Image 1 (cartoon, rainbow, N blue to C red):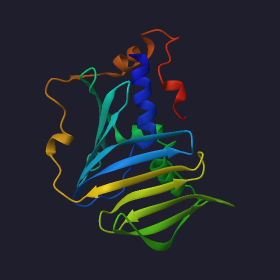
Image 2 (image 1 turned 120 degrees about the vertical axis):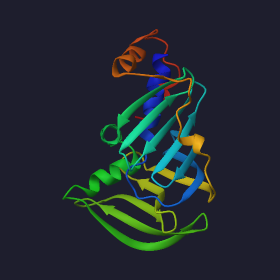
Image 3 (image 1 turned 90 degrees about the horizontal axis):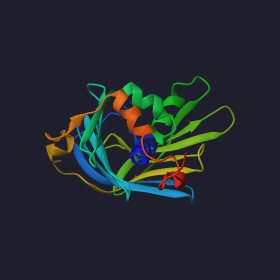
Image 4 (image 1 turned 135 degrees about the vertical axis):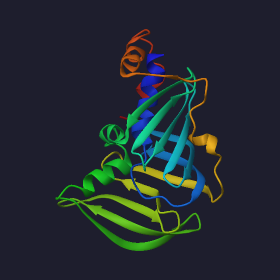
Length: 213
């Protein structure tokens, strides 16, 4: 159990979406490639200020629900029917190692500057392309859909040329159940999370050692 929970948080750090403005509703497939080392895939659902995404691996079935208007997030552990609530600021802190959150973090740094450099079409959507520059190098590129007001691609050079992309984007109504906590789930506290991290056999690493850090 410990390793399933830890695996989820590694995945969470990899894909959490920040406070970018959103418009309308859509669903898409996402992928997160860490060079040639590892690729994460899943489904994301967006509706106005809400979004959720699913993560399914051999070790667990999990998900995240985010309300950017309220500044809150809910983590669902579907394999144990538990959920955990936290502030978006907490996700920002642990999400600095992911492409969108780290992009937003570096924008706030006086030593970094963002420029819109061109427009391109991805997945049939016109995108504004932004370059994020540090003191003497390019840190990242971000493609933001003009229609969706949402980043659909980020290439980040700090972590093995990490690439985040959305594909098979479908502009349709999203089922509200994607943003609901199932009625038979129980709340997890910080103490419960700590216990889940520390139970089980330390020697059984599952697949966690293969995950990017």
